Image 1 (cartoon, rainbow, N blue to C red):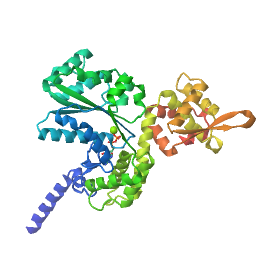
Image 2 (image 1 turned 120 degrees about the horizontal axis):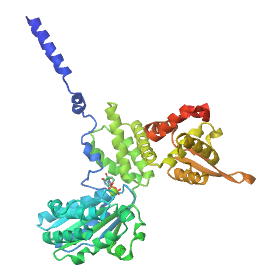
Image 3 (image 1 turned 90 degrees about the vertical axis):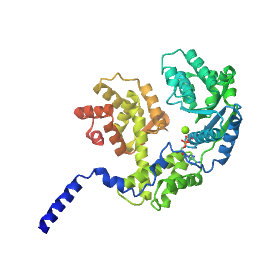
Image 4 (image 1 turned 135 degrees about the vertical axis):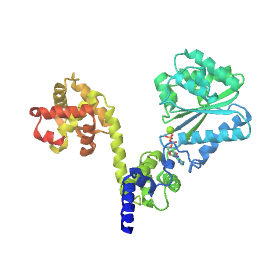
Length: 436
Ligand SMILES: Nc1ncnc2c1ncn2[C@@H]1O[C@H](COP(=O)(O)OP(=O)(O)O)[C@@H](O)[C@H]1O
Ligand SMILES: [Mg+2]
């Protein structure tokens, strides 16, 4: 009898274990991360090492809002990953918190102009800061722009108070639409009776104001702040702060932090790059069921990131650029010392065009495309003097061969070219085929 009970219990246990969800083990055993969110791009920390001065200046410029006066408009410059977005959002959170405690009316709006880059979209987003009913007041599209302006003015005056509007990546807005929208926005205050608007423009491009109408330039840049790039030691401190928040104790080898920091410092002191490198390293270690993130994983993370970057560049190349790149990759195995001339690239390019029914461009155009591919870092093209025979370009692929072959296979157009070429081996030598 006892034996029978034991068998039944065993069967039940077996049944239970086979009913387990595959995520049970993964979720329970969170060995590495304490709080992943702390490494995400949207996380706003409570402290920003090495930005005390910038935060202080920024807060002082906005302070008048707490007394009901309009703060100056501000332009913020700095390379990517220098903390512009995170600090602007942080300051806005802080000022709203203070205003709420003191019963003052401050509204804030954050607009990324790469995502919202039409005057209509910008005005609609500012309108939403005043009330959630804004969506019911104006439709998402369809009104004339001056009607949207009037609705916004009305809404601002009905609500009163001060609106602080962050226009992040403001150069994208100007590139796409010119500066008319900024002209109207910076002039809005003179039409408002019971409210005020302050604008904070953020840009990676220090030269962007040279395209602005001088009136817009002076109104928008009443104050300006520059965020300088971080050095390796500064990035290391920023990472150390995140490591404490994001990871369990002693799971990240300290060498990992210095390695990520020095890599990012080489690339114009970009803290985002360092944080991404750290996050991806930890995710790869986790996937391998490791308990410690070692420097080994930073190397792996780096190649994942590079591949992603190259993938992004390749996938957005126009068709003749892709064809030219394919020609270069294809020729690479054939040429002595791995180099080829523009003429050789052009010959293969023409053959591919014929195979894929593409109207070929002139050799001169392909020469220009080669220079652009060089600037994008996909190939190296160096001009060499041939003495009395003049000069030529020596071209070779700048990316790891395995990586580029993988990426070609993922791309529909490029993989079709490869397929076509494989079907037409007469055009190409076997050495070339082996490359693909
Ligand atoms: N001084 C700092 N302290 C803590 N984190 C920082 C600091 N500077 C930048 N970061 C972090 O680095 C990442 C990139 O910053 P971000 O504000 O997006 O840069 P930018 O807008 O200048 O390109 C964000 O995750 C941000 O939180
Ligand atoms: Mg930013």
